[in-house]
Image (cartoon, protein in one colour):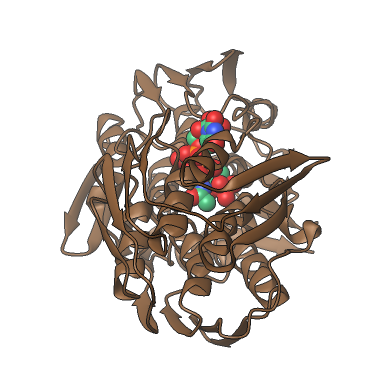
Length: 417
Ligand SMILES: CC(=O)N[C@H]1[C@@H](OP(=O)(O)OP(=O)(O)OC[C@H]2O[C@@H](n3ccc(=O)[nH]c3=O)[C@H](O)[C@@H]2O)O[C@H](CO)[C@@H](O)[C@@H]1O
Ligand SMILES: C=C(OP(=O)(O)O)C(=O)O
């Protein structure tokens, strides 16, 4: 399953280019099946989830060429709308293919998606929206059966601004006759990125980034070439790595406005953070102050995908921080592992109270999910002695060359298979 061996206590220093965004590239890869032609996608991060998405696309008949960080997807010879169950179960994002397959192939059979164990993660909003668009959706024996001969543009009011449901509706509606309006849509930058990609392919979508998205269905799409934006969660993770080690780093090719909620907490914690063009500079003196409250919220609120990493930082801050995880009900699995390293954390339901300690101590810990695993690596970088993080395949879902990038900033971290 792989392990990281980390020797803590080295302040990180240097410059790093931030990888392409996982949560942008996955729905965009799903969207490549819409044009029945060629999509050239640059800045694709080399991640386990991307490899799974490639396998899924190949399993339905797409041909894919990889040239370094560029993928060329040809979707002209898709021969089935059934995706092998073991691939669907490998990651949550497989569900996004349902919207694309419905739009293009009018029929789909799917099992429920898998992914990290961070909560129940229902897909009721996705399925309700497909029904509102006119699809027949049936759930039986663990499978979802969808038929969509009569899709029609409509008004969809989401009960919650779900990222995945918003993306799925955009994909399903893009080739659907009429106008679809999504209200209470998710506003994440990855939604805007999907809109940019789809419009470059010939779709007519506007409003992404606001809570109302308007999709005018079109009949045919064209070939497309697109470059994936940088990953705001990876940028945030490295910013915290600098903060927790008392380091000074520069992150290149990223947009500070995408992580302003994280940056404002780092500034509150005593770090000096600013941006110059597409670079973010983070200076930390290691005298971290506790941030009183951290409440995860849909964008532009504090991202749930940064909660674990920020908690690792608060374990060594002066004072007490209170975390409220409002998005996923089971996203505190890293807490028991941080406690093994000497952290003082108490959980009551969705609240975690973190009392800062002077230092953490190296220990053998287990990654239980993607961001929780990254948080343990950050804790290890600051801890006294050696930390061994087990089950790092979780971390490989979202971080390209994680240990190599940390090494380039001076960290002592090696991978053992
Ligand atoms: C690949 C990707 O982009 N993943 C991101 C996406 O996940 P994902 O798209 O799964 O997240 P959602 O925004 O859909 O989920 C947010 C909340 O809504 C609930 N919900 C969602 C759909 C639904 O049909 N019913 C329902 O109740 C979920 O259980 C969760 O409590 O957004 C999350 C929230 O920012 C991030 O943590 C994930 O990294
Ligand atoms: C939870 C995450 O991803 P996914 O939705 O792909 O499980 C994440 O990126 O932190």
